[in-house]
Image 1 (cartoon, rainbow, N blue to C red):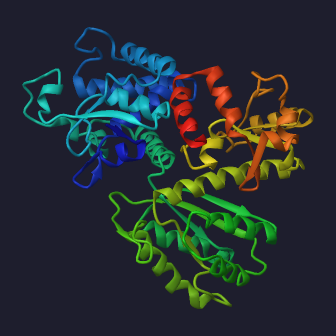
Image 2 (image 1 turned 90 degrees about the horizontal axis):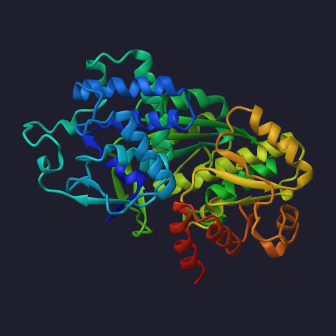
Image 3 (image 1 turned 60 degrees about the horizontal axis):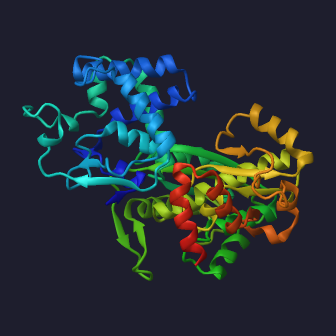
Length: 434
């Protein structure tokens, strides 16, 4: 049996709250270990948590927790998830043990995490004599009661929000330009019932605005005619605010006209509230040119992907480089085709642009999830250097306004590199190509 990162996080609930912030602290340790943040601070935070949990910094086997964790991380890095060691969970997929493995799964982007259901929770613990299910304890309250400082808790909570966003455990809210004067008021209204994980303030030329808006609806079931009528009532609009909002334990219902698709009841109600409150404050109101809300987590992932593509487009526009001189590569290709959920955008470019793009991405904040790959991405085929990949339509396809390397080329590359995550991708790609 396998569980997604999203479903794993959603399952860690007790008293209707997320109660496994220990996973977040372990994730922070991994970020430090791999140079993504200060390692000494990350290690200090992890050791503080482990000492409060266990009254020692050593595992029952005598090894330091940190050394065993580093060893586990290196195993994940080189071999991926070893299926013979599944996560041990209860019938609700709540972690009974294996929280270090769970943190590694989240950090290394394991999409299908093996798990095994255990009825006897004591049997999976080192100390079989415990009377309390202590694995339920590690929510925000535990950290506050055990002397973690405000700065430490803020660090943990910031990373928790980041993990929820990364797993698409949230919903997208698009505020159209018709209400740009009221953006801050609407955000304040939303924050009363939802946690705002991230916001993006976008600005387009008018036609580009409509093009991007149409892409937002690609996974929706609204007729094209309705979409065009909506945009006809947005003349002159250039601004757009996209929020990703979180609600713990959201409820869903089947859509009336499309019973095989789900819609979140809470965000559906939010959309109604915003619309009713602000429709009298704008001119030329049309149902609904105020707000668009993603129905479910699939919509979330689609819009997250579009925001990242727009981020790349913004960088290229600022450098006056046409996006036709670039090509998206790596697992981002699978994301565009709907066969994988990758969080980053990897791309290559014509050789003449490489230096300026690399300098921009290195020095500009907010582009951590947009990566210019090393030169000659198709290293395994000398007949397809980057410039040929980009210029020759036989090597790429166009989607979402960008060029993407063909799936057969991606398959070749993954066969050459054969990293742990590539092995699973090879199977997925072959299935798609059938």
